Length: 153
Image 1 (cartoon, rainbow, N blue to C red):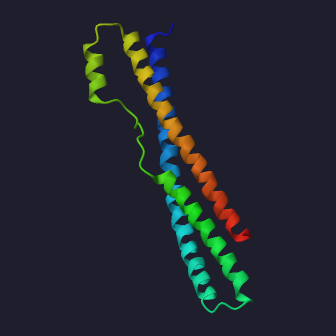
Image 2: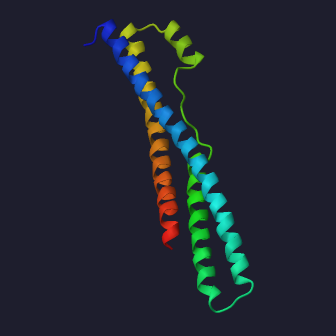
Image 3: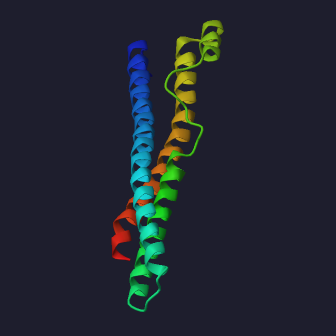
C-alpha cells in the first residue's frame, strides 16, 4: 500500500517516462524530416543523371543509367519511409485535460482512487504513444538502411 508521498513519487515517475516517450516521438519526426530532405535531394540528382545518360543511349552508357535509376529508386523508397514517420498520428501529450481534474475534484472516493485512476489513464495513453514510437522507429530504420544501401546498388 502506498502512502500519499509514495503516490506522488509514482505519478511523477510515470509522467517523466511519458514525457520522455513524447520526446522520442518528436525527435524521430525531426530526424525523419531531415533525412527525407537529403534523400529527395539525392534522388532528384540521380534521377536527373539517369535521364541525361539514357537519352543519348549508347551501349556504354546504359549500365550507368540503370545504376543511377536504382540509386534513385532506393532514395525514393527511403524518403517514403521518412514520410511514414512524419505522417500525422494521434499521440497523447503530457498532462491531463480539464475533464480529468473536474472528475478528480468531484470524486467521492479516496485520494488513492484518484491516484489510481490518474495512473490508469496515463498507462493507456503511454501504450498508444509506445506503439506510435515503435512504428516510427521501424520506418526510420528502413529509411536509414535504404539510404546506406543506395550507393551499393
